Image 1 (cartoon, rainbow, N blue to C red):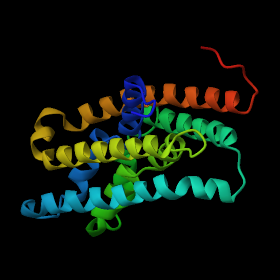
Image 2: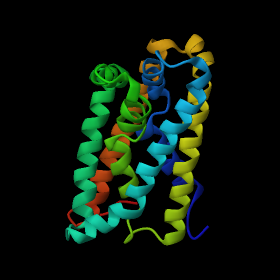
Image 3: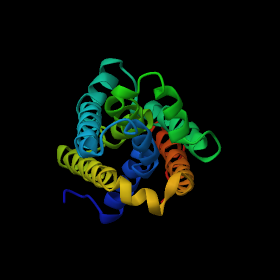
Image 4: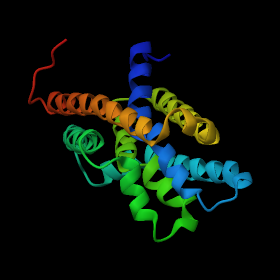
Length: 212
């Protein structure tokens, strides 16, 4: 598959899954649909996932163009992105729960819950937007590899939709506490990915010798 290894596929899928954090979006979904008739929950979930997917696909297609237009070196972007993702991971591990923060922001306009906070920034989070740009760099990845990344993104979004459609059943199993615990574990994984991105950026700029 054009030099794409299974390890790279797994790594990219895990990275996208972690930054999108479908499980962490469940409590946000519960809040956003609290005043919505249950028969409309499926349409509510579909609308949110479709909007989030369109936003992330836009970053996949145009993110690199913006980077080139600004004349920024990708190595510098990798380092900056890694630092931002690391800070994002720290909030997942030590900070206020993702759902709690976004629910608090949504209290003023609960009727728009499918767009805010569910689609953005819960599913299409800033970390997800940044990760998509990093994973589809034109100078590093071929069109075929970027297409595979797009497929992985669509796969994660499909998983997200399934989880939201099963939200009622999952609520009895996980609850808010379970979702928050899983979110923090994902934060630790994301922190590791972020450090690796910084190291990759240093290697790209020639400031650090690559180690096999």
